[in-house]
Length: 161
Image: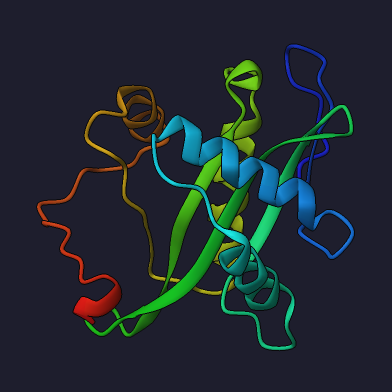
C-alpha cells in the first residue's frame, strides 16, 4: 500500500474489501459494467460475490482504491498456474477507477499493488485481458510495461459449460 501523496496532493490508499465496505465495492463494479456497456451483477451474483470474497477460503481477492478517503477504484485478482514456469500466475480480473478520478495516480498505484502481491507470492507472471476498443486502458497497460500476447480468448458460458 502506498499511502503516498501524488502530484495532485490526493492522498491514495488501498484497502482490502471487507463486509463494511462491500457495498461500495459493488457500486464500483456497477460503474465498470456501465463503462464497458455490460449488464451489472444481479442480486444473486452480488450474493455470490460477497460469499466468494469474504469466505474463509475466498475464490478471489478484492481491494478498494481510495483518494482522500473516498473509494473511487478497485481491483480483483485470483491465481492460476503456469505449468511451463511451474509457478503461480496472478490474474488481474478487474482494475477500475471512476472516470472523474483517472490520471491522478490511483490506477498506477493499483497496478503496482498487484505487482507487489505477485512478487510476494512468487508468481511467475501477471495476466489480464483488455477490451479491443478500450484504447485508454491499452495505452495505460503499455505504459506500465504490459505486452500484448498472441492469444485468442475463448469462452463457454452458462448452459454451454
